[in-house]
Length: 265
Image 1 (spheres, rainbow, N blue to C red):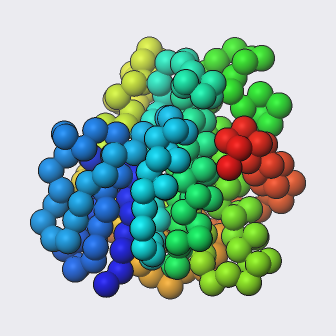
Image 2: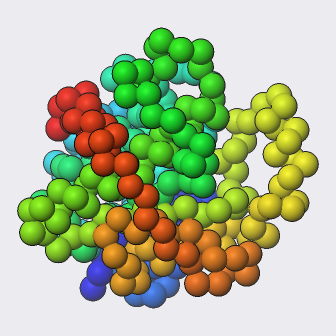
């Protein structure tokens, strides 16, 4: 039986992914911030507490895990939230979307047997990594800019993880996926002009069903895709997802080194 660990599975794409994998007969562990508010889908499922904004919670979760993990799906994320810092001193987007998953993946890597799927976003294309100011302490804060940076960080993390896995001779693969534009509620923090534009464009650009947004994640988690693949939607009706590859070796290695130092993995 294949074991899937999915972060942020209390709602949205994570919940859909968990439901579909459980329906296929897999063992699914839903890692969520508040287990009391989650009803696991039918099947071989369980809910465990994990707060990616708190590195102590990440370490506690990893320390309590026993047995192999076939697939880790780093799905949890926040989008366009007001400026804030976590107890570890990280800007919220970078904490939840990158630093938390970075530490979790590294701590669980000895138990991973199949692959790591990290959920990014098409907005990563607009992201700019400021390696000297990842936590927005020296520039004017932009909620969407912070989100875009964190999603680009997901792709750089995937690239460098795959490089290290290949170099070590590991058969584990690191891949990334993005859902396109899906109606999941992650954008609820949009405000001002961004909110107006989003509401105007949503009927045109959004997937009609959130389930379509989960298809690339499911594809990346279950199909035979190469390491460092980037899986995105193939069309609005859920056609076969597209595979891409993104390369930026220098930024990927530097981001890894900074992340390792800041999280003290």
